Length: 315
Image (tube, rainbow, N blue to C red; front, top):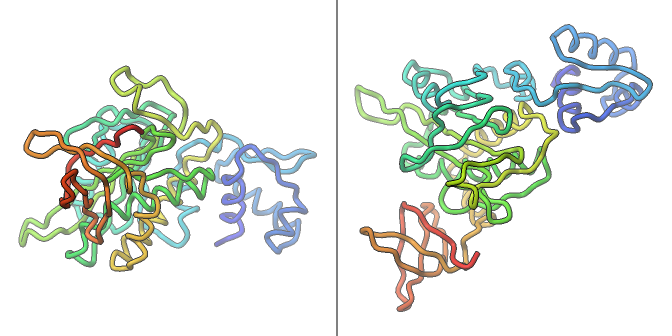
């Protein structure tokens, strides 16, 4: 990591905090003169870094910036696209994937006019208040594609905790919850090769509610947010990108599903689920290595649910 990027990393991890020149020189292992030079270069790149008696402070850390996400993504050079407004980041990423976009290509937006969730649901995506994110990956192991959604959930938990200190829970199969409210959703979509029908790319869409907002009435009782006003969304996007690329490159690692189970909000709880348009109850007994939920029915028998919607009773 270059000195410029290391400073950017430190500034975005503690938004609004001023760092003394000598303090930065000490933690970065360089001279104060090198700190001044690196800060000057960041300012020339368009970063609003104020200096004063208290030290250096990066202003407007909330801005979603492609160059900032790139700088905080390590050595990854795949493109980053950032839009003020778009219908759906997944829609745009699917187009890019069909045009053979690079592995790790990222699409982010400040606002979605038609954000999408699983099973035709919409995802409320107000301006300035969330992170709306779609990553393109080229899966190397076709037989483990079913683990991409659990990998996305684990990655989102890790990125949120890294940047904010908050640790959400995972509600099977693809939602993140804090204090019984949904704060993030995941939508993974395959893009198939037209010649042989194999999966050429997967688009991983993640929407995270960051600030407290007035949600529409139909979701007001179930939707929530991280409740954080001062955050670098670019740092969160870069962290999420790094964690996703790691976990989706290690889908065969047994630790992945262990992490998914560790953060589960449903295991051991009584749930309701729907099959053939009928609603049933049971206890979420386990999540197997295929990501399916194992339900213990009232008669003591077990059922393996591969997909669908569940609700947690008495939560």
